[in-house]
Image 1 (tube, rainbow, N blue to C red):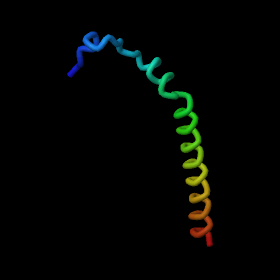
Image 2: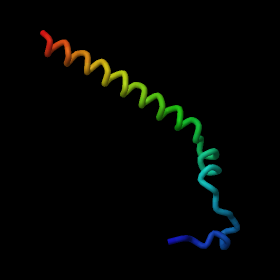
Image 3: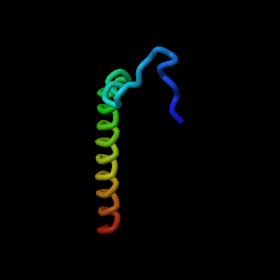
Image 4: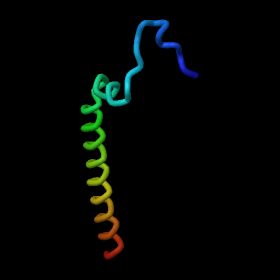
Length: 55
């Protein structure tokens, strides 16, 4: 359901505009850091599992 935005005197934002206003770059950097940490954790866990299997 779409609201009648003209009744409030505002305009709808494009996704790019909304992202820029809401700090889109900040959240992109946060997401990249979380992804990197997950990759590092998975790599370390994989090494630990291999060490246990190989004795």
